[in-house]
View (cartoon, rainbow, N blue to C red):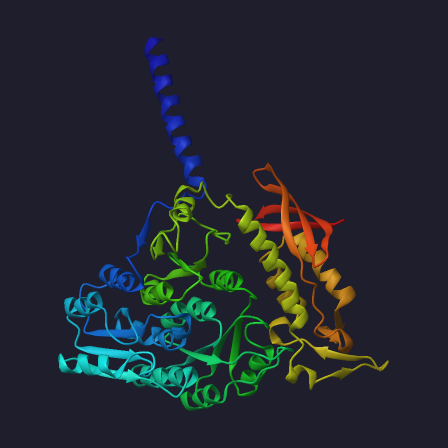
Length: 486
């Protein structure tokens, strides 16, 4: 009998261990591998990244690390650097920092590619590299559009380009988010200019000519109407390109859009306030198949899996230890901060605006449909040409029931059906929401899958109304399940 009791006790103990292990494994584990690659300044950080990723390299890409206006020339070289399997090192405008010179020697580099003209990286640096025996190629055009085209030409001469990524020329965050994805696909980064006050824009002439010269048939448009005008996408399609748009009206929502279609092996985090660290890290991010995220002081993303490895780029002055610790100590995807909730609300609102603005481009307006009763309708572009497509897009941020309500509201106010496809009444095209500032009042974590929050909404004159938000955990993500305004 004693032996039976002892055996039964051992059996129970073993079962408890197994069950504890099972329940622990069933949840999403916290990240166990958070590594920071940061130096004393942006130049030192670029060296730290090179040290981490490469023991040697015959090639090095050199880019200007001073000022955010320099991003365009530099980011256009990411796909080339990825193809060459080499790091991007940063330099000053006038002279090369000693730490960068030493890294080039340490890598055993033979070929140096300089991104940009002498206005961003001086001729004296180029001459100095040549005098030291390096083979130097300067990739420079008359402006950022032309420089990107020259970089595409060199990449195309080494590996045939079949796709281009179209990014805004005036907002560096979007180009830096897109660069690792473009690099992995062997695609070129090309720029297009900003829209006017009505968000009208044409494809930049140099970019258009380069696309025709390359003969590509596929394009990825990075950002929604306020980032890259819908006119641009429509014009690209008229040029015969198949366009995929990564929707989003903020860098955070665009980064989330990329993550929805590209499940990376880890996460790469850099500051969203200046370009240098994200640029230096772009090739390493692409090589590791990581998803790049840009942050300020908070993590404004809802991550499906925080157990993946994380690379933090830059010192604690640009990406804080608190942020790294938040990821490392997170109990799983059920953790969501107030900042992440705020971003989720912003992205949800932007997704509706995205649908509503989508018909507001020149090509769509030139194809107005007139019904039998004389009402004029504007067809929505291809990405929203069916209710299934609209539903799939909105479901990134809302639960099934919430999205169903959104579709009903769109139908009542904006979206109509003509021959089975969504269209907009001509007079409604371009209508968007008023701008409000939302301030959190209370938050209650009701249970493991439900959060309720109350916000004060402010317009220019003060408190406008209260917003009551309910979030539900659905499909391994936090989503909005209800919004009430009072």
